[in-house]
Length: 452
Image 1 (cartoon, helix red, strand yellow):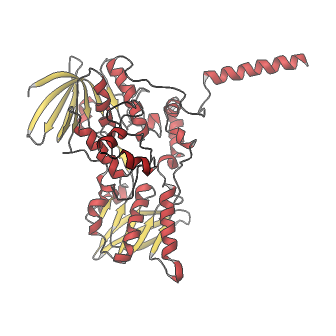
Image 2 (tube, helix red, strand yellow):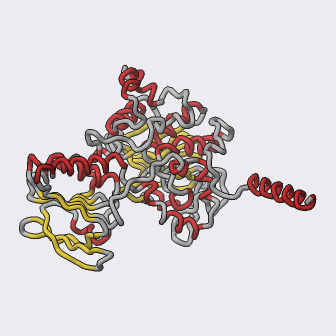
Image 3 (tube, helix red, strand yellow):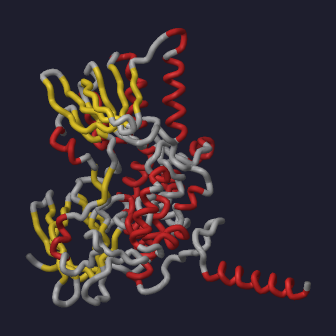
């Protein structure tokens, strides 16, 4: 297996974040390759439903927040698609989710450093301090060894299913990530159940609610959350998805970070107010004139088990406030139970090199480097795997370009992209300037009191 020339960067995985990394690296002299085992770029294909949008403004494309002049911006995509005027009259910040996916595919088609259908099997640190990356090309049925000074892990997240329900996964019990591909197979069931509390659960429920009159199934939605609550989307609330808050959060101790994250679910796990309104309005219209909707929405209710029956499934439900259990029947179950970060098998060869905290999680520095057990000038960087160290902004598309700019400046050894402090109106913690202002104010008060 012949070794290739030493690269500056190898990216593992090609989602929006590593796609942005590849695009932004074009302004440098760095040599790079990015590998993705999937044959093409696809961003959450199972949830590219008509009428769904991004939950962040279009400026959260893969480059704009670091380089608004980049040829890979969403606005330039629109220009090349001859859609600038349509977008101008569209007058919305949130773009269709399918269009965002197409924009990313457009960007990917222009970057020569991307390799799809190529699976990274193993990463090790060579004796010369260079990372040895073994890659299998599925199309060519060939395995190669690549070398790089730095590795950027951008493998994203994977569908998460509660442990008690994993054994029940099958044709008509599936995760929301497969909804678009599998939804047709459940429409003829007598009843369909949606499980989950976030945006995906709401979008699936609304999609099924719209189709319900044509198929006449009973429709249920259960969530163990306290209610069907909207995501925090006030302008000051959104400032939590900023470099300033990330810096503040990083400075907290590990125990405090865990406490804070537990209380921030509605910053990134809730439902958009618009989707809630759409569901309510449709239910209201459908129940007018004395009619009834064959629908059940129930919060504070956990699905503890799913048992296959001769005709459908038996669900065990537990109402957490009443502390009561009950059984119900359904013909299909869609688990909109979220996603989780994970460590791909390919980094097992680095296990002795990567430092971990008491919970077994990677110790990630403020500049997104994994702390190493051995001093090295060559690093492993993490994309969207640093929620435990950097806070709620880790998976946010709007912070991806900033994170990439921070990483690229380190790889290039100079400031390729400007990164800024003080980009929000509020202050998240007591900083040195605040303490100085308070001290100066205290001196002023003391002088005034002395004069009295």
